[in-house]
Amino acid sequence: MFNNFSKDSPNFFIGTVVEMDYQKEQVVQGIGWGWRYKIAIQGDYTNNNSDILPEKIGYGICLLPTTAGSGGAGRRTPVLISQGDKVFGIKLGGVDGIPIILGTFPRTTDIELGTKIHDCKSGYGGNLKRTSLLIEETNESCKGNTLQCSKGGANKSNRALPS
Amino acid sequence: MSSAIRPAKYEKLSIIKNNTEVRLEGKTSSFQYYESVLSPFVTVKMSYVDTGNGTISNTDRQGRVGTIYNSLPIEGEEQISFLIQSKLGELNFLQNPLLVNGSSNSGQDSTKETIFLDLISKEGLINFGKTLNKKYSGTIYESVNKILKDEFGIPFNSKNIEKTKRNYTFIGGGRTPLDILIDLASKSSPEQGKPGFFFFQTQDGFNFRSIDSLISQDPKAVYKYTGAIRSTLNGEDNNFKIMQFSVGKNRNLINSLKTGVYVSRHIFFDPRTFKYTEKYFNIENGTITKLGSNISIPSSAKQNVSSNYVRTFQHILDVGFYEQGIGKKYDDDPALQVAEATMRYNLLFEHVITMTVPCNPNLRAGDIIECYFEKITTDSKNQGFFDENQSGKYLILHLCHYFDTKVSITSLTIVRDSYGIYTNKNAD
Image 1: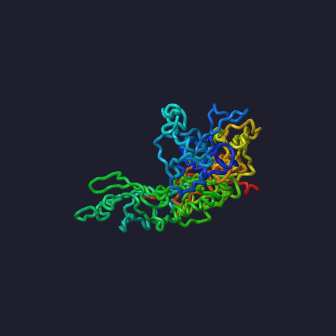
Image 2: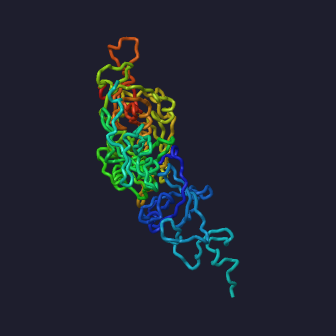
C-alpha cells in the first residue's frame, strides 16, 4: 500500500525461495500472475519456522535481464528459480517495500541442505521430480558444461564408451 | 513574580537498586523532564551533588559509606521514583519509576562529586531488548493494541489509542516494537479525518492519536504574552504568562512547495497489469481541520495543478505481496492516503514557536494551548490588545519541565498549521 520509492531508499536483501508446496497457487497450479516466488528475506524472517509459517511469507517479483525478453513479440525466456534457491534483490519503497528479485546465487557443491526457512533445499519440488539423469544440483565453474552434468553425472568426457 | 515559578518541592526522589533505596531530595541540583509528540518514551536528565554519605558501599571491605555513584553503584537500570510538587500540579512517577539509562561523573574533588543521570521510561528501555518477528494483519489499530499488550504487558488507556480505518498487513522484520509503532503511525488514517498519526508517551502513558483529533481538542490552558507583569501579592495572576518566546520557524514557501504540501503528483505502477496511473493532489481549505483560520495557499498552487506540481512521488503498488494466496487487489486509493499524509505532517510544522512559561506539570505533549501575543501598534490597544494573526491555538510538540534550586519553569515548542486566532468553527 505504501511503497513510495521516490522517497524511501531501496533496501538490498538476500532471501531463500520457500518450498513450492507452500506457494502452489502461484507456481504449480498456474492461477497466479507474473513470475513471483515466496521468499524468506534474511532479517525480515527468522529461521524459526513457528514465528511466521512458510505459507504466510510474502512474495517477491522477478526482474529479467534485457536479453531475456519480456514476452513482447513472443520473445520470452522463463525464469528458472527453484525452491530453496538463494536469491538477491532490492525492496522498492523502503523496509516495507516490494521485493524485486534480481538474481540467484548459483549453487555450489558444498551447500548444506536443511529444513528451516533459511536453509537451502533441494530444487526438486512441485512439478519437478528427481530422475536418474538429473542427479546434481550445482552450478559452478569448471564443473562441466551443463548444470546436470557436473561431478557424478555423465557427460561427454566421462561417460562409458558403448561396448 | 509568578508563584508557579518558585522552586518546586521534591516530595520524593529516590534511587532504588536491589531493595536498597537512597533518597536524593536534598542532593538534587537540577531536574529536567522531557516529553515529545515525536518521541515514543519520556526521558529525564538530572544532576545531584554527593558529599560521600550516600550509602554503604557493597564493595568496601571496611563497610564505609561512600558516594551513591560508586557505592550503590550506579550501573544502569536503577529505578528512580519521584513526586515533584509544583504550584500548578505535580509530576508523579511513584507508580511507574523511570530507569537509569546512563550516568556520568562531571566533576569530582576530595569532598564531593556531581553526577548527571539520564533516565528513560521502563517501556523505553524494554523496547531495546525486544524484536518483533511475527506477521500482523487487520486494521492498524488492532495491530497497535496487540503489540502494546503482548510486548509491554501494560494497561493502557484505550481512549488514547485511536481507531484507524484500512487493513494493513506487515511483518515485524526484526524491528523493535516502538520503531514499528512509529512507522505504523505514519501510515494510519483515522476513521474520520485526514491521514497522519503520532505515537508518543506522556505522563499518562502511550498515545496513538491522529493529528486531526489532537488539534480538535479543547485548549488545556491559556497563556498570554505582554511586556508587563501584573503586580500582585501572591503572584497568581502571572502563572499563565509567557515569560519569553521566539519564533523558531515560520512558513517557508519554497520549502513547502518543494515538499508537496500544496500540490503534488503521484505516479503509480501496477506490476500485475503494468498500468500507469498519474494523479494530482492539491490542498483544499474546506476539508482540513486546522488550528487557525484558513490556510493561505500560494497562487501557483491554485492554478492548473497538472502543470504546477513541483513534487513527484513514484509508487509501486502492493498487489497482494504480503497476502496469503493470490493477491490481485490493492488499496482503493493509496494516492490520496500518501498525498494527504504528506500534506498533513508538513503543514503542521509550518509555524514553530519556542517559549518559556511558569512550571505547569499539568501540560502534556500533544495538548492544545491557546496563546495570546501582544499586538504591536501605534494605534490604541483598547480596541484589542492581542495580535489576531499570531495568537490562537497551538499544539505542544515538545515539552520540558525544568526544576532547580531557584526556579521551576516549563519550556515548550509549540506548532500550528495556519495563522489566525479564529478556527473555522469560531469564524462561522
